[in-house]
Length: 277
Ligand SMILES: [Zn+2]
Image (cartoon, rainbow, N blue to C red; front, side):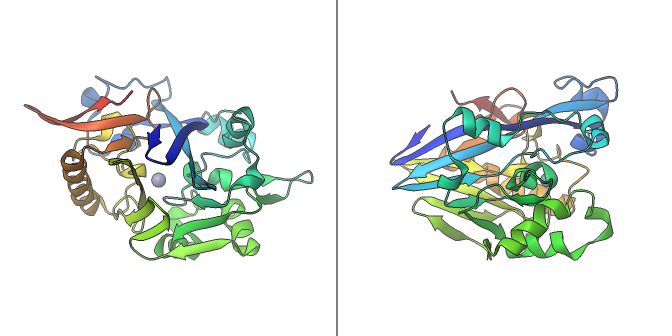
């Protein structure tokens, strides 16, 4: 997709499956199973979408997918694909050393897992050796604080090599990362999740990350049991959906297994989504 001078390419960051009940929070299965099918272990299939953003000599990656540093137990629990972001970059002919900036919306393992890779000795090292990695300050602090309910998803092998590399760049609140590329806070799913906005040629692309992970999550009540601040998440979603309707944004619903670019539409039964081709 093209946004003025900014070119955006969508890449497969790897696939996983998560418990359907956890993915839909307070929505009962008889409702969510009308549109989403679960496997024999009640898991639903999810994508992870990584964006390659190219503008004015800059090469930016948004999100990093699941990565490939998992043992057999994790692979089984989450039905993880072997394929990860590096395979997609390689297929697209993109050298990881040519990436100057990475933006992460938050640091859960299915968003930050690709930020490091295993070297020949099994040690985790940064996947993008020359990139600064932009994370919200509060998210980084929460991820590194070792809060007991979060240690399963804020994984040391993703975070410690990044800290040691000296390439971590924390931002507070709204910030412009490159011309036409900015971040804005989306409190709720985590306390300091941030969305990524790309603006050019009169058009807007917005990545709401786990605020609206799939097309089935556009409704204000359709949220994840993983959300740390459920009510605040709903208020944030209400604001984002209103803004996106007003501005005709294209939304990247990055974990939708079938399609990643959508627009919110207002109809007689409330707000829904339709594909942006
Ligand atoms: Zn998350």
